[in-house]
Image (cartoon, rainbow, N blue to C red; front, side, top):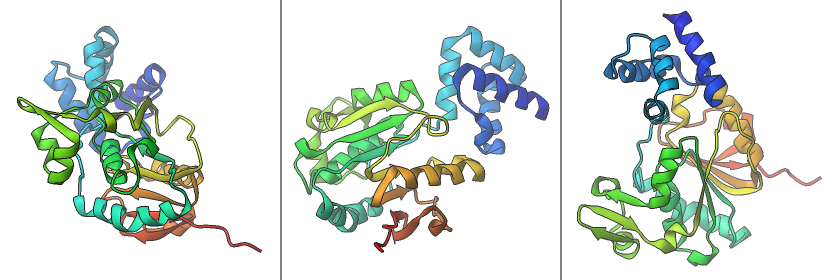
Length: 262
């Protein structure tokens, strides 16, 4: 079974460029086993052969692998810290912030960033790069239609201002959509842009191995400007932040250390 999963990892990497060995094995195997059993397969070998023949099954694999669970203002008190403590300091440096929502799933996170920023600067000054590995998630994000459950944490003022209800769904305002550019990106394989003021990557790193997380922390640090901020999820505290050139700006917010001048 272990050898079969190793072969599955190799085949997936050749087909998609996704390296499953960088994801926690126990969690990933459990998630994918339930998917292939649900579709009538008895092994990873059969499952991969099925994915090669059936593009819908392959898409289902990508969806299951990338954990597309998201909501607006997730852990709302952290977004209040961003708004009241972190952003004022960043905006002292520049009112044209370079922002990246990494592993953005179906768009709730980057749109939340835009709404939070809109309380401090005009929408026409907001530019957010939002990336994910899953084309289907990105497609949903660009459409910007959400169910009521996704909006549970949205402040009433923001809900009235930036959402339009149609029957049982909510459409996000076009002005917010225009602030976000969505692109496909593999965090574990693709190069990172740099000179970001703020990188938000939440509730994703917990699925990666320690080796993969170590590499990502280094790459995030390199991608930030000195003084820039990495905002992670509420189960993703970096215990050795200084090892990556970070200092704690608040709980789950890490600031890239500015080099002292000689």
